[in-house]
Image 1 (tube, rainbow, N blue to C red):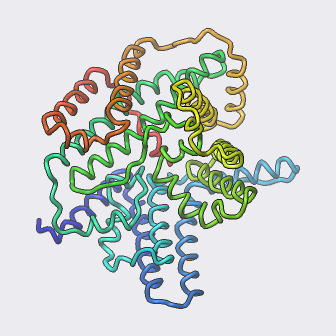
Image 2: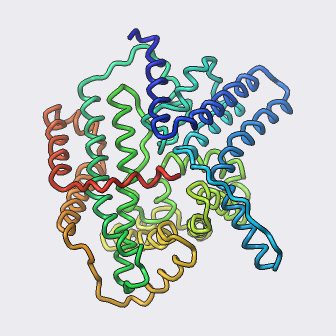
Image 3: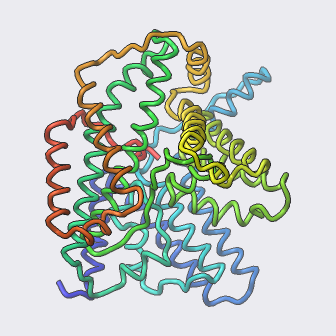
Length: 452
């Protein structure tokens, strides 16, 4: 196919990819696309600030309204019912049974960022509807990110000639294999043990629940970063670069650093389109804390419509506010470069993050509090229910640690292949494939972030 029609092939592939899950919901994606495309052109042509603000407001109401109906309507109804029950007021919640469109939280934020960037005159609107539709629906990152910016992705998608060098193709393939390794060897193996304990948490002691929480921390990291690696790798094999989404987050020495390394496309989105417009850290300590709390509370709600995610976001906002107030957001070990100091700060940060993961994994707020109460007792011993996968789990975690700490801590896969050559890259892919075949599990678990 001639290069000038490449976008058509990619758009058709992206739409078919999305329709494979639920064909009718492609209409929602197309509707959001057309609305923001039309509004962005109006923002360009109008110099009337009131009209421009009205256009942005229409975009926000449309996109967030669709998201609210499908994702938050039942949560709002249940919350209203709970409040009325406390006040002894009769209220019957009117819940719907609509299936949550896959990827709606991701593509909604992506198209909102486009409209706001046009409004702030950071970019010019795309005049071609089809190419803008491809930006919104580009299949490698459509359902679970990374959440891309138009300034970075759109110019790539508009290129008629895309050359993929062998080194770039192999580095993309290596990322795909690494992502699959993280998912089927590590995350899905961890899920077996985590699910057994969390689904029957009341019969397990504190140390077993603590172990399951630690394991879940690595499960969600390998599951989500694994998908990001696959998405980035597939795009790279086709000649496109997506943004990096994870940078060894569990090596962070404070919560601020963690959020610079974890789900980077979301954390930077929240920073640029919510935290900074609210005032950021420019209005004093109290307002900074307020802005951090609002940002992280909404970040929690973005993940899911339940009080668990609200509390998860609130805890992260609280930790960030405390760090900012006491000026702990800079690397605390920079004043003491000893290995013990770095380990201590990393250990504390990891445990604070694991505290928040309890609310992320538990089925309800009450269950999360009961689990934390049991963990606080630290009763033992640790119970390993399913020992059949324990060996695979140890092998997978050790292999991942070696790959990420010794190879990828200071280098990207593409840089390593550029340095060591294609044979090294092919060997790396072959090694990961061997590990997947030997130690992978096929339990059919979907990626965790598909539910968001």
